[in-house]
Length: 285
Image 1 (cartoon, one colour):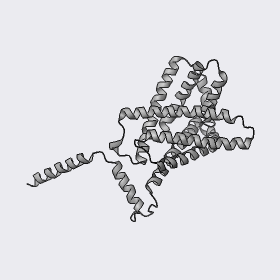
Image 2 (cartoon, rainbow, N blue to C red):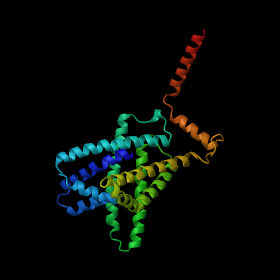
Image 3 (cartoon, one colour):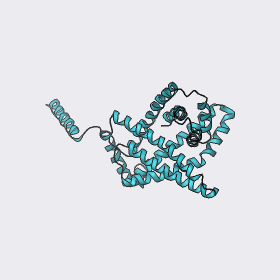
Image 4 (cartoon, one colour):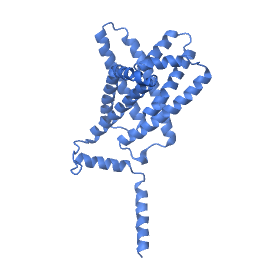
């Protein structure tokens, strides 16, 4: 997820900048608001990326090339995210979507991410009228939690190839929403320290290190939210410390893994078993 997301950030910023220059040519203020909202999603490094992207020509050719690269990388991230979530939520291989539906789900996720940027812009505009710094910080954090939780719910609902239960949705939204909000709150401090300490040794590569760290933490929180939701739904606790003394939850996990790895229908498995028994009986005869 981190690998493909990393490659999609630069072309997505390029496309966003070029499209805004074309669509909002007469509204520089709105262009700046939307770009600032997108930049804020990547603390410290967002401005550096935007500065480098802004130096490129926003011609239609650049937009098309950037869009194609962004879609390729974005669909790669959504593809592996689907595999990860299907594994966590124990979706059997038999019930997983085919290649075409997987790509369609991936495109839907890209729309969700774009909506996140627009939603953040609207919230920033609304909260900008609040004068109290403490109140503004509190409202901004709560709004970020709610918005992130909605995005997590949308992502999980689209990427997981089965309908999630109510408990799974609530837990994943809560854990993911709070986790992403806290990461954004302390992310600037963390990445600033990573980039600052690494710049002396790695120079320009420190930006890459910091960006990869940021994307990795985002993906880690998303998958942790999925794991918490799966554990809550199936009551997968307590787990054994000693493998030789499994608990009921350990047996439940083993059953879920067995069901998840099923690649044949029940009728197909019965047919193969019958053929195997007939072949064994023939060899014995």
